[in-house]
Amino acid sequence: MKMLKSNKYPESIRKIVNDERTKVLAIVGEIKDLMEVGLIEPKSRIQFSGDTWMCIPAEGFYKNTGIGRNRDEAVNNAIF
Image 1: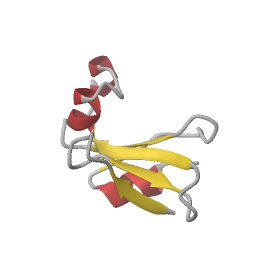
Image 2: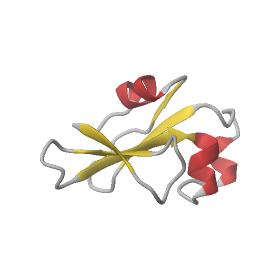
Image 3: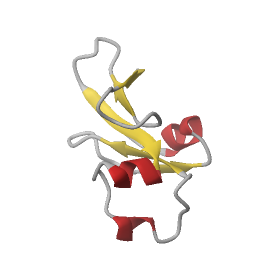
């Protein structure tokens, strides 16, 4: 599993891909940045501050979104 930065997204957002870089497994980033690019809706962050991290598994790998105080905690809390 590797984390890749994209030039089209804000600094905090990373794609999580398999070791061969052929499948996107999840997207991880701060909630405020995920909202900024339209990956989540503002109403979905009611109980979390903008600097909370969220890991969203990609379609087909979806089991459970992870929330955490930092990137690693959010990824570890996600189930995919």
